[in-house]
Amino acid sequence: MLLNVLRSIRFSSIARHPLFSRFNSIATSKKMRDVKVKATSKSTHEDEEVEILQSRENEISSPLSVKSTPEIEKKYVHKVYDAIAPHFSSTRFAKWPKVAAFLDSLPSGSVVLDAGCGNGKYLGLNPSCFFIGCDISNPLIKICSDKGQEVLVADAVNLPYREGFGDAAISIAVLHHLSTENRRKSAIEELVRVVKPGGFVLITVWAAEQEDKSLLTKWTPLSPKYVEEWVGPGSPINSPRVRNNPFFGLESIPETEVSIKEKKTEISPSFGLESIPETEESTREQKSESIPETKDGLGEQKDENSVEELLEAMKMNQQEYFVPWHLPYHRAEVSGASASALASGLAKKDDRKGAVVYNRYYHVFSEGELERLASGVDNAVIVDKFYDKSNWCIVLQKAKP
Image (cartoon, rainbow, N blue to C red; front, side):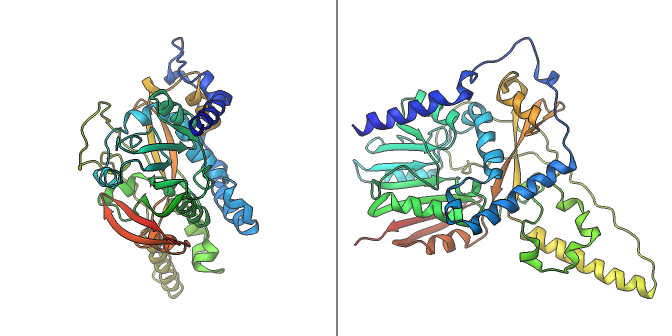
């Protein structure tokens, strides 16, 4: 009965989604290089920052807004993964050993809930357990469904399961796509809610403390979201020099093409959770302004030095990024999602690399942040925590009555 209900939900939601009418359609009469692209303007970037601010303001004003998806997630998470789903899936085949070990340790017959299952690479990993996956992306869920996996479309902050439904739950590389702290905490609460007392929850997220520091130069840092909250009114951060600093813009940072292997391999500890290594790239140099050696000039120089120090400190504490995904032209739909994304400005073309470039929103977690969030969740205790391959990870156990 349960399986019939899940299948009904899954297939009805997929059938209604307009993307699938063109999911596999590729026009041969037109090349991706010929598709027109909407020009990216400064005002567009400013609008993106407003979306982040509004999501924070709306969350504070309404307790129900935690379950209302902010625009930045709709645009830079949901729409992006819908568009890149087949290519994304082809690069997600290596199982992370730590996740595999967790799943293999579960008793036979356990019901395992994978919240944010993506292409379903962990579903069925332990053949003695029963797996149910969910994801916000219809195209990714269709990929799972085509493989015969039990899946449905659902939101991580509003899981469609009754309390105590599963024996264990996993959330692999999902929480960092949620744009507010309340939503991230809510997702953890949902994972705890849907497992039985004594059940375990494994959560992994991208770390701000990346092992490969060069990766950070290849991501686009979002302008500081809440300047007044961080540094207060009247701060030098509001000076024209700071506002015009390239660091605070949302201009994309160019990258070199990423070569991705699309053949399946055995489980390998050399693979990170979801990070894709990217090749090196030169970064932009900022020009400094010369300041006259006058009394006033020395005062200005002191202020400017303070500003530069503040800039550097904010760079060190940066946690909000756009992380690019390069969709090769031969994998993009000329008449489908990619063409629509290019026309709307959601994506851009890079003819040199022969790819459509999408930006994905990430909040990377600092050391201790994930534990702090989880510690505020009722009826759960942290039984393990570790850092591995640029990811922070925790295992929670739901308290028994």
